[in-house]
Amino acid sequence: MRIRITDLCFQYRKSLPLFDHLTFEIPLDSVVAITGDSGAGKTTLLKLIAGILQPAKGQIDIIIPGEAGNDLHFGYLFQNPDDQIVHFNVERELAFNLENRNTSPDQMKVKVEKALREYHLTDRRDASPNDLSGGEKQRLALAGMMISNPGILLLDEPCSFLDVFSQIHLYRKIIELRRKGISIIWITQELHEIQMADYVIALKHGRVVWNGQSSRYPKGKEFVRAE
Amino acid sequence: MVKAAAIRRGKNLSVLNSMSVKIEKLNYRYDNDGEFQLKIDELTHEFNGPLGLYGLSGSGKTTFSRLMAGVISPVSGNIKFETESRKRHPKIVYSPQFPENILLGIRIEDMIQRIVMESGRTDLYGSIRNYLGKFSLDYNVIKGKNGYELSGGELRRLAIALSLSLSPDLLILDEPTIGLGFQGKQQLFTILEEIRKSSHVMIVSHDFRLIRKICRNFWILHCGRLIFNGDWEALRKNEKIRKVVGIDILSHFLTQYFESKEQIAH
Image (cartoon, rainbow over all chains, first blue to last red; front, side, top):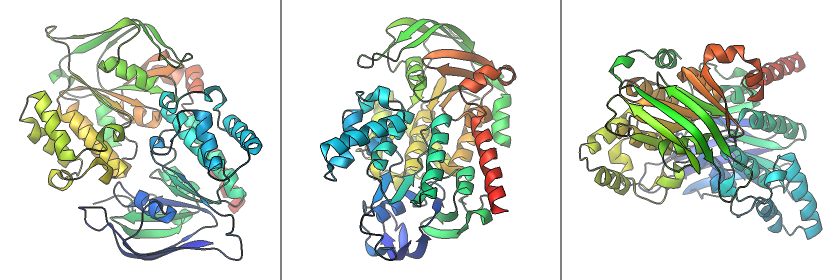
């Protein structure tokens, strides 16, 4: 399974082109880290893959062998959980993704309870997302994404707002999901997270400047550092 | 690392006006959240080099720093600042955890114009351009853009640059490195080294590695209570506190993880 990006062109209004005829492939049977400095195009690329943004030109194809693609859908975790959370209550927020997938009320109840426990939000079930701390909001956004069992996860710097215990909880989750064969594309600027991934793609000013196995990623970060 | 260490050592502090804070019977709770309560009975601190406020999520860091900045008022108790001159209340600028919430939906040029008008200082334009430049942001390039057209890191650099340009007595930076990237962090360290000569700095973060790099003194909040106030030497000796707030847990986890990965590879 892989994502094939062909001749991709994209620019924001009043800005110079970010992606200018970009062509490359992302392997999908592992954890792939996308790294690069601020403004390199990491989040834009993820949004283009997810279909949140539309390219001006070019194509993004998910190449799936056999019929594995029938139920396959993306789960997207935004950099800022406020961009992701739409409901006024934690429990309703968790049910939202399932409501959009025609889940029966009984099944929905079971899945919401499980997610509340798994992401340590049981005590906050009636709270408004506005009253949650940054880390709690990120856990809610993550739980809301995972509740529909997506096959490909797109994570935009998911640890940014997490405290160290929640961060390790997420790392264990990523390790567990990888074992289950779920594909993960993980935007990160932390060297230890790049090293935890299997494959690394480094972007700079909208171009791929390095890609390969994470074990070969240069520790000096020269590909991340912008001049 | 070298720059961060230089900031921590706190050179040239003599040109900085001395300032202290005294907190008495501070009590805060949100109207619609019955469980959380921030309660600090007594705390006195003489600002001397960058101060780090660390805690787990939900510990009350942002609430406490917003109380310090006067953005919100306590239910009871008080926070009193004292400066050398004693004639005026110090100017405290708070750079928020989520600049996106303020900077989206408005043209950058209009927002900067509003800040300049409210401050009554036309010289602020020069100062803002100066700090934007130090963060590799060109005013002429970004002025016509709306906040949503900037990346997460660009928004944060813009927010910090605006805060710095106001020449505060105390600058409170809430989670300043989120989304900044390698270059942005280096720029922030360089700027902090410069700004600490004229402003006191308080860094609020859930990332202790960052606070340790920059700060000389640490406040640690846990479940709305201040459980530590001291320097690294004192914290190094206090294993109980380190365990409660997970100071060493990430490095332990990573060591174990990479060791087991290596064993599997062999």
